[in-house]
Length: 309
Image (tube, rainbow, N blue to C red; front, top):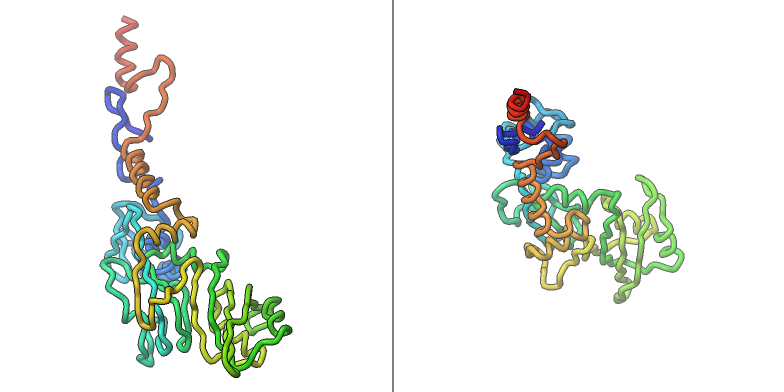
């Protein structure tokens, strides 16, 4: 309930009254770069997150001033929306998209620059023998928008086959074939030339299943000799990005990516909106007074008493 001074002016709300500034705990952790929303939900469910000294629950909400710890380490949650960092990387064959590998193989995370707070989140994966475009971000919400199946974000691949696809095989790929984990299909496939038995094709899929392109071709009795991801959603791999090279996107390109995802109109507009929201929360609008009831209730009683006398 809003508080008023004796002159009827609104006072600043107490921190505990700022419920409209609260956020779901798993979403706040993802936005802080700790991982995807699904990963954060699992982290909370496993009892590895505490909120104000208590073991957190998945349904918990967090607000400014709350103490959040993950595995005993204090996590700083950013309440002002900032431009996330986005980095593109040309993955090489022989690298894994994981931080931990019992076999000690090279990881794509070994080549990434350090992050002051949070961590790099991989947007999608590529298997050990596949090269091409990988996108990393510090924002879990952005990663969710680009990878969640309901958004059906396109992935474009250049694939080299030992042998050529005939019309019947291409139609079956477009219509869908039955794999171990359900029906899979490509949305578009076009020949891209080749020499001898090695034939190149460009194809587009909208799923991120494990080894999906290779399994589709194996189902048709063809072998993939090389596989390169050349585009993920609106982000295409530039020709200047050679194997093992990385490049951080400038702010205007990150803003364009956010607009494409429908997250914000522009990052600048989002910052302005956040600033306006903070101003409104710190000084709530004074409710319209009923006729004859102006000022603090205590002052009105005094005035009314004087009028009766």
